Length: 106
Image (tube, rainbow, N blue to C red; front, side, top):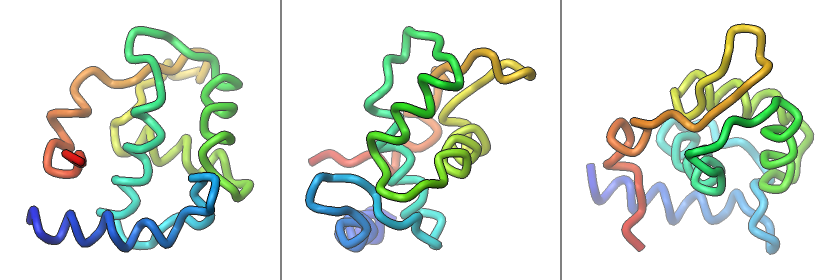
């Protein structure tokens, strides 16, 4: 799977603008996971965030308007955890182990 992950990283470059913001959410699951990892890596794993703070971080990393899609996907892929009422979000502690094969060494 290592070679194909490298290939996904190369293909994913086409999904970013010159400012490093995601311009389109990929349809292929491995590319989605990599794109979401790039966002979660910018978050403080020791901090609890409000929904508004999470939205602001996502907004900085995407060039399209569907912040809710990205937030929901980050939760569904277990990169983010949240309270049931959505009042607090956090980076899941074990996401690096879960997605170890997707994490770029370079």
